[in-house]
Image 1 (cartoon, rainbow, N blue to C red):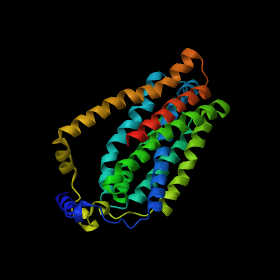
Image 2: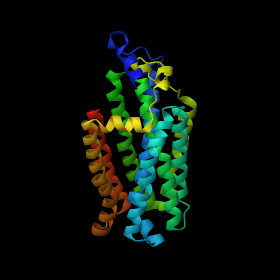
Image 3: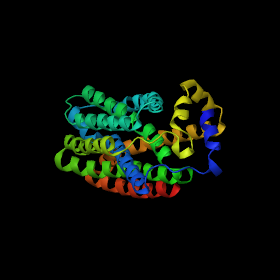
Image 4: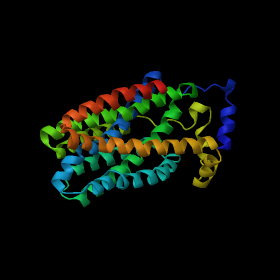
Length: 296
């Protein structure tokens, strides 16, 4: 990390050099990565609007549904993100992203074939494993394609994938579930991810590491830190500790609300999955998306 910092400070005038990518390509690559992030959130959130019909068909309790939509996914998503990010520091990030999208999309489709709670839990674990490998390498690629002065805007656009994914997940999942059943909803939202994975693998290029910050790939590779080194560096920064705790608190309440609001509206107000999906898509997708983009 010291070598990289030295290379950055040594860049002429502190300005990032040419990246070797045209603006059109960079925008295209950002768009494709955003599509991958959107598919990530579609497959993650689709379960929320399907909990009630799944409960009725499989005969499971709310506790089991909470376990299914929370712990089974979160444990693997959270713990595997770190080693996959370390792998992305040292290997081809584009291929990791393509493989991750393929895994979580395939496992989402598999959710439509299950006949028991145990099978659905295993499939959702597979979704969590795949989604753990999507974001860290994408963040790294964006950082190497866009110079520092444009990076926040690029990350804001990439992060729109959250709101787009939630919008599609609720809207498509709600109406497809109402018209064709909850199994069909998994098929419809999981299939397009395979196409996105192919776009990532065969149309994106692996950017040179550290190029946007004025560092050579050799310098960055030589400076790739170990886990404990990264942990000590981050924990020593009070701002990081506060941000991490704040994000965890926001996620704790946010995911709980997004997961159980559809079931609450169905049980208490007899709303249909299509109606719920439309309203939540408008509220979280459009309004939330505007906030994400403007903030970036």
